Image (cartoon, rainbow, N blue to C red):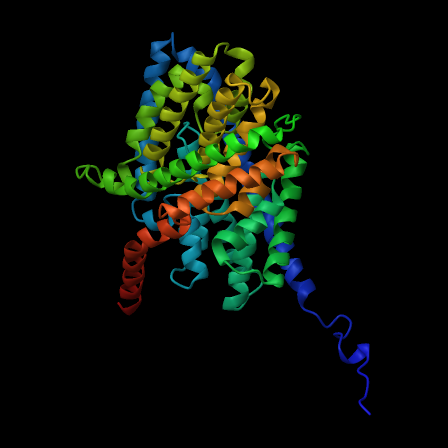
Length: 457
């Protein structure tokens, strides 16, 4: 007769699991990342609020405008010096570099990356360049994880990579007060695996970092929008067409973003570490025209959401939104290609909000949705455009749900995001960070060879 196996032979012994130790390390990484990212966010938010005051003042005070331009030139020189020998690690969002680290194709000098990304990220975003804060936050979180693993916990190589992963999730969580999206981003765009210990440890770090931001910024979602209406089934067919358009524009965004470095390279007389002068000067006339457009910028999304209250007439709305989209699209590319630190999350979300506003105006004009549902299209546009460009629909839906603070539009968001994702995939689109990482591969190899040469020497 077979012997029955009891629970003591199947379950682990009490307190024998190492999971609690991993959770503890995740909490430490999350709290440290949360503190750093919170100050980063606070400085950016305060500075961008200041730009909304100083730009209108400079419209009539030309001496102040001249002083501002001189200060911009000084800032440019400082940025060029700090970037000179650290371009690979510091420029862009930092996500492709972090992916290289987790794939053992690169290794960060964590302290150098941490302070340079923090300082140079502020220097690039605070003047109003169309860059997101989330990229630097993700890379700073990874650097915090690596630093704590090496200096405090004396971790093994694999344990260090696990703490870097925690820092990635914690960085995105603190950037947007979105812990679930932080953990999902790690799985969907960085590790491409769903291992329970990685997922739960990263989620713990994300929760801990979000707790820190909650203490500083409160419980209000970082981009709260009052979505109160539900779209009727009659709106779903036009939404499918909107998804197709977003998929095409997502492919175009990827095409331009990947090529922008090649286009900048044609300016042979301007060294890569000095390209920042182009967007730093071009942002000034944009700010003089409309300072609310500057930065990432979640404030501008609120402007888009409230546009029907301030602009009357179908043609006026369409024209204004069209101008907004062209400026935001072009200058987002100019900003990102200038070899400065900054992310693409918020610029993509803003573009999606504008496209959602355009779709909302059309659907209202043809009687497909009521005026109060305009804001629904803004939210759907953000989720779908982001999900298609990033090729990360789960992260997109979760991020928008946490940022906006509503779950009422899950089905239409899923529908439009899935269609946009599929169209971009059919056109040949790639997960954007994987594509950027592939583009940076020759530079990464050059970095490795240089370091190997220094070691041999």
